[in-house]
Length: 66
Image 1 (cartoon, rainbow, N blue to C red):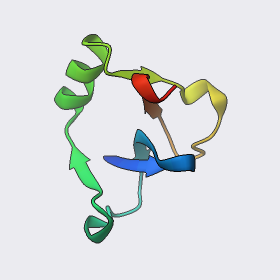
Image 2: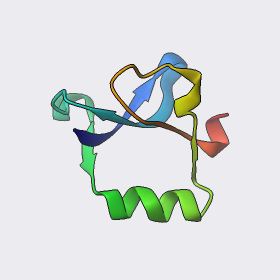
Image 3: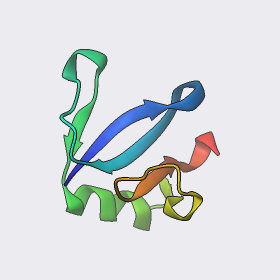
Image 4: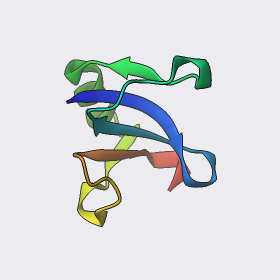
């Protein structure tokens, strides 16, 4: 599983955990677990995994997009 920063519904920024490859042509990028942790600790991203929107794994939304 990889962490990818991307956009989801209505162009909201999200970090998804997935087996899929990043679509770098669309601007998607891979992130490290350390980068994710730092962004959560700083309040930049919020864990919304419990919504069930990502069937593959964890899901984090840019806090300002919520």
